[in-house]
Image (cartoon, rainbow, N blue to C red; front, side, top):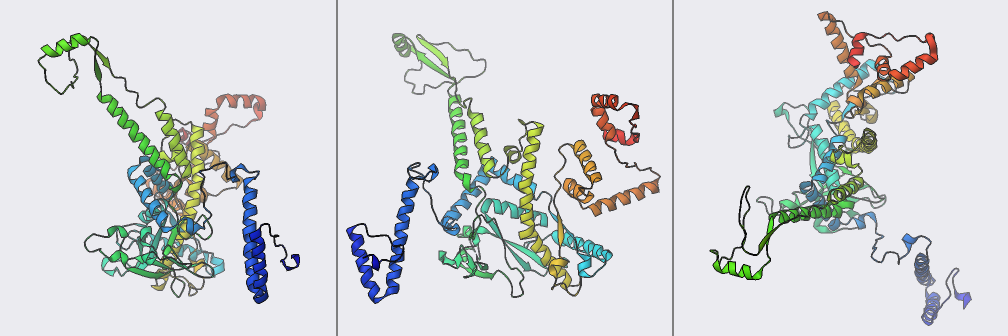
Amino acid sequence: MSSFLLAGEPRPRTRLDKIGASIDRLIGVISPKRRFEREQYRLGVDRLSRMRAASASSAYEGARPDRQQNWRTTSGSADADLDPESLASLRERSRDRVRNDAVAAAAIGAMADNIVGTGLRPQLQLPFKQLGITETKSRELAEIAGDLWREWGTRCDSTGRLTIDDAQNLAISQVCVNGDLLVQPLMIDRTAQRRRLELSLEFIEADRCDSPNGIESSTLRHGIELDAKIGEPKAYWICEAHPGDEGINGFSGRSQNWRRIPAYTPTGRPRILHLAGVERPGQSRGRPLMSPVLNLFKQRDDFGEATIMAAQIAACFAAFVTKNDPMAAALARATSDTRGKKDREEELSPGMITYLGLGEDVRFGTPTQPSGTFDSFMHWVTRELCSALGMSYEVATRDFSNTTYSQARAALLEARRMFARRQIWLVAHFLQPIWTLLLEEAWLKGLFPAGNDFLEQIELWTRAHWITPGWGLLDPLKEAQADEIRLRMGVTTRAKIISGHDGDAWEDTFAQLAREKSRQEELGIAPVEQTPGAAAPQQEEMHGDEKDEQGDEEGDDAEPVDEPKELEEALR
């Protein structure tokens, strides 16, 4: 029998296995290919059985099926696990939490405020040698491009209501709450509004992108048409109206009308910008940021509401009247003027004096809600929620009341790493493509006098450094001293210091300083001299004991530091 078995084939163990092997041999006489396929499937089943047996006796307890009887898992793909029904439910619940939960609203607000703030803006940085232009020409083009961005950014969306800063805030908020956002660049003639640039952005909420009639296929996933070979998005299917508008006059039936929008034009110009965070290979749509903790958000909210309700109910019962003598109580009821009164409730008012009946006693209520552990428990739950969102409790809730300076600084620095990463993502997927489209239109209209090879080298002609909002200074004096030392060491630049702390371009800052200096000279005002080591006097005053000890060790050879008194007063 072994001569008829394929290499690596498990030997038959039961009577049914022997019968199956005999059938396979008979099929092999007629169709060897068919027999080979059957044997391959048989090998797969045998391998799966061995894997399950190995898992049951695995050295990793997390892999054993008997460790957690209720631990249900899936092995689906990214799109299978994030199916349209589940994704729609996650979006609805995420929006509900942001609308009705203070912590969720604060966390999303903190995310947008720290990533976008007052808005990211570009600074054109042309490789002038590579493009064959002079450095002076490069600076002139950078100034023109900056003016075009500011002009266009006053009203950048198709409705004419959003500035470019509003658009950035909307993009981050939508991606965090809904999981993704689609942006369609349009060309709208606005000459009647005295606008030179036609580029406009249409923002499409995630709910409008879906497969027509819910029919999915291997190349149509969640409203995104994919290339069959490499999986690249080829087109997006967009509803004409939001599904939530169904039933409103004028919108009925429009949510069933679909538009197929190609991802790119034949010349390679993007027609849809899909803003979504990808966490797994093959993932077509993004998930809401709060997905892992939506249940915990709801449980926290329900627990807090139940505790408050219990406290309100307990507070309603201020006092209880008890009957210690049944005979006296019965006699009192027989002679009372309130005989037959069904309402036994009384009201308490400040300064009220009342007399009890025979055999009656009063016991005042002692509410037990909220308990002493309520605050610590809610604080712990909130910390868990904020951690899942990638932020510390202090940053998400803006509550630094119970933290030290070191703890607050560590929390802010850790959060800034996450915010900086998301800023890079926002630039790469949203701002830089829009910037490229804007300069392309300006070049075609003669507003941006770049070279004739603009389209051939568009990436070089649109290269930009994106200035992010400044983080501010936690300890202005110490950080200014540190910046001065690093600048002397040659490990940083004034551009990085100015953009990092203030969110400004160093050219603008230096130009403003030059204008101020010139104006001061015109008015006869002596400017404050900026000398190296300006922070030294304050440093010595703050650590006087250390200065004395250092002076004793160094002796009289130490040279005194002579600094202007005006600067010393300013540092104080």
